Image (cartoon, rainbow, N blue to C red; front, side, top):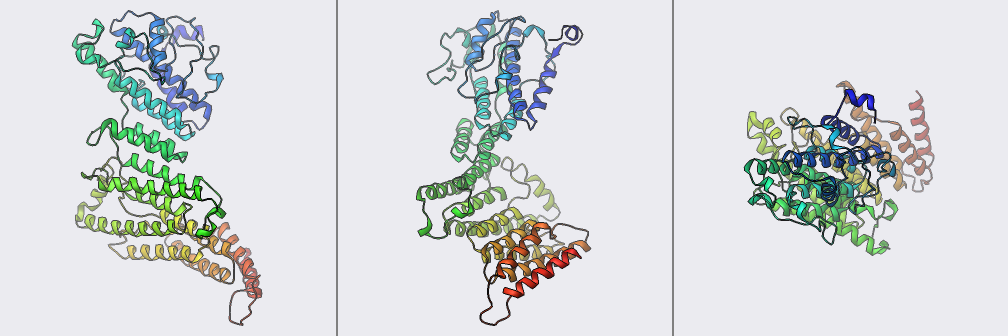
Length: 530
């Protein structure tokens, strides 16, 4: 729009690329939406550039018809062409300020200086996936999926044959299949020579979605807790390329994202902890509980698929198990859900021990083996089955939600025991060296007792607080600050003591209730002030 600047600096494909990449990484919704608009413009320009390089003499109205069939914006052969916004059923509404002709005119192919030797700054699968990630972060799963379908269209359709098609779209609004014109030279003489065919095959390869593209769309639905659509994309990924493809096909990352989507679906029906049923009689909404249980079962079904894959290419990892454990732990079908989650946690711990022994048997190659596992199965976690505090914290929080403080504390005891045993094994390199309870772990257990109330809660809270102090002092001597009391810790202990202060000591036994609990609260407050 600046004539003086345009006379000195011409717009290039590199400039388009950098702006799209920057906007896609932004945390602002409007920036990400603008990245999508510019990306589609960039793809339109790229396609026409390739058509022109093949010597196709096509006027702008014809090429814009083809672009429209692909839900791509029009491109001008001058600086005066304007066009109304095209309706796209696969996109959510984008702010009008980015699409009105006055603020976002169709780009002119004649003003773009395209560097044919620059194979990086093009609208390829990597750049498109970057915008898809931006959509995913903003919760725009349908927009991310629309780009996946666009890549599939561009990589599967014979774009030359489209010029000879009068009806470009089918009844569902998708672009029609025009056959594989490249295999026999196509309907247009311009693509009958080997050089042109190779040129278009290269173009189709550039747009072909890789495993990261599929996983990004699955993850976008996962962030929304939409297990149904996440698994639908997983099935598309499996059916499109099948097992055994080097570049595509379902992998561990995609399965984990789909499992996580189902796990998030289990608790989306209700975010209120009071809605967690503690007995069949309290299940006042059976339909919601049934859906929540079904989501957890779907998560475990995908885990079973991974374990049953015959080649071992889909071997699950700690993320796979953690997601299924979370699905059962947070579902509304309690206490069955937590019982199954506990069984799966034991199974994960057994697998971690077995994998650790196999790794240790390799001697010097053990650490190298773990590093290599990053690529095993397409994105498997580098630590394999080795558990971490996240999965245990999920269990603790779920026990707290149903008022089972004793079981929550038992999980904490289990973590401390497993971590301590790992420290004594091979200079602290045991299978559970990552199962180290942190401040959040202790606070969650304290909160479980505080919420439960009663005669026990004050005493148990003080006991847990003392254990945390002992660990904190030991860490301080080692120069660590992993577990130490914080504001939440003290507030929660004081709240538990306040609840115990309401309880009378009727049997005369030594308990931290009534006046004793109140006195302990004062002593704790004094220790904070001093």
